[in-house]
Image 1 (cartoon, rainbow, N blue to C red):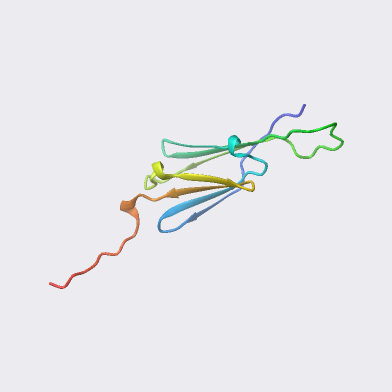
Image 2 (image 1 turned 90 degrees about the vertical axis):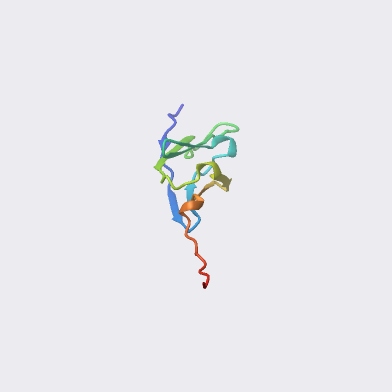
Length: 111
């Protein structure tokens, strides 16, 4: 029996005017294996790759693995509106900025 390794998945982070986008590579993870938590200004993502083998393994290169990554997030994130989706082994997190920190234009009226 092989020991189950824990690894930090590769992550890209993007910023737009309205949100931060976190894209994490978690190959082999399924929706039930993914957990995303926000607590005390930290965002933690966890996922796992569980493999089921049929028959005797003649060669074994894909191990079960646990993914874990934690980030500090700004106070400007509206944590109640964070969403996550998993598609083809890529976890995408949308971290919307609070309305009061988004850029906006102020209209000027002539008096």
